[in-house]
Every structure is written in C-alpha cells, then in structure tokens.
Image (cartoon, helix red, strand yellow):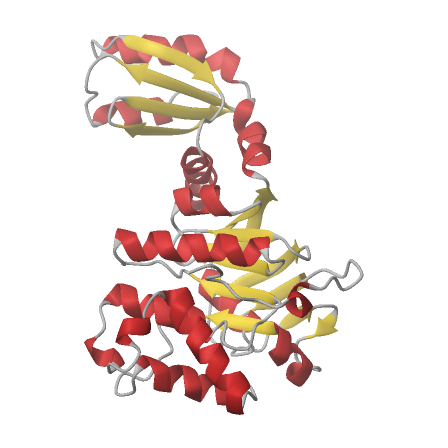
Length: 330
C-alpha cells in the first residue's frame, strides 16, 4: 500500500495552539466508595502530541478513559477537548474525537465491513464518502481479505485491529485508546504500533493508556504514571529517569539471592524501598550515598558478590515499580 493511513490534510490542521486535551482538577467518586477513583487530575495533551498513561490495576486509568469518552460524568473538575467543554459541546467534540475502548466495541454477528458501515453512519458518514472510508479502514487494519467475514470468527488480534479503525472511521483529529494491545499476537501489536506512529506523523493527537512499559517507551513523547487516582509524575522518559537518578541504586549480583534478601533490605535505616528481581537489586533512598555501604554489607552477609553497582534507574519499568510500590506501602 502506498498510503496505508490516508488522512486528509484538513484533519491535521492546527488550531492555534489550543491543547488537544486539558484536564483540570478532575475527580470521580463512585457512590459508596471509600476513596475517589480519580482525585484531582491535572493533565494536558498538547496538540499533535503522543501522551501515555501508565498505572497498575486499580490506578484509575479506565475510569479516566470513560470520563474522556463521555461515558461517565466527573464528580468535579473540567474536561476540555480542543478547548471546548466535553459535556457542553458533545456534538462538536464527537466530530474530532475518536475512541478505542479496552473491550472491542464491535458486533460479533456482523462482518467487518458491516461494523465499519454501521459506526460510520453513527458518525454521520453517508454515500461514497462512507464507502471510501470503509475501504481505507480495512486497508489500515490489513483485513481487506476478511472484510465480509463475521467478526465472531476473528482472532483476538483481528478484533483489536477492527476496534482501532472503528475509532478512525470519521478521521478524528484526537484519538484516545484504552489499552489497545492487551492479549494479542505480536504481529497485530506491531501493526497497531506502526499505524499509531503513522497517525501521529499525520498530525493526530493521541492519548493511550497501557500497562506495557516498552509500549509507552517506544511510542509516547510524554508519559504520566497514575496510582490510586492521582498523577504521581509526568514528563518525557528522559525526565522520569532523571527524577530517579539521585534517589536510586542498582546492583547486579554474582549469584542468585534468597527470598529473604528483599525483606532484610527493607529494614535498613534510610532505605525507602527495595526490589529484587533475579540477580538485579534496586533500592531507593533520599540519600543513596549514605546507604550504599550498608547495602553492600547486607548483600555480602548472604554470601553474594556484586558484579556492578550504579546510581539512577535505567528503565521506565524501574521508575514505575519504585513509584507505585512506594505509594502502595505508605
């Protein structure tokens, strides 16, 4: 295909610097809940940006996506899409916003083509324009050969691909995706990643929630880490790694540590958290230089040597674990 992601230039037009998505003190509390699912979220996705939301199960990601999609009304705070209030200007926002939910929003007894035609009509498309968009979306998802098969016979990966292009049928300028690559085959995941890169290159603003660290690192320009309904940190991957640089020690051991090592490290004075994964040990402390000697001594008590030691987190996963485990224990 010469142009697998055929978006016309009108859908990438600039809107004078207005943020694509802007959340201000957004909160959501479910009736009877002890704590809010969203608690004072401030977040801005710039126009043309690619923003990722990371968080463990229960962090509030799906609630946030449901609010952005208009499925839930927030308890307080504001949601602006292209500078317009989400609940006051739903019709105008519907034309520029594409939603890809976590669970495929497709009709299993319809074919892929029939699903696209149905959702296209729901977005106001008709006639030749609708048919051209259906064909374009089938190409984007690489399911043209299966266009007239009932979706109930599709693999999980094909359903995810169809789910993606249903959100693209009306050529939105802003795309929101809730964990779009959960439990699918590597080829479908790679295809979805490639299509998202192409959409971003075409000027589409993208917000994606995921729990795959490598997905966020590979795709996103900016990342926010959520936990217990709050944004803990946000910035580029480089920013997040730098934030941990002065608080983290990493060690690579020469042998396999016992399970008791992590518990012993947690009790060291001055240490905030300790993680042991295989032969890798990562600890966080307000003054890591002051606990380094104690750390070495404790490791040696278990008859283990240190292959290497350094300051700072080297991966987004380590930053994520450090932040979310720390908050969970407080």
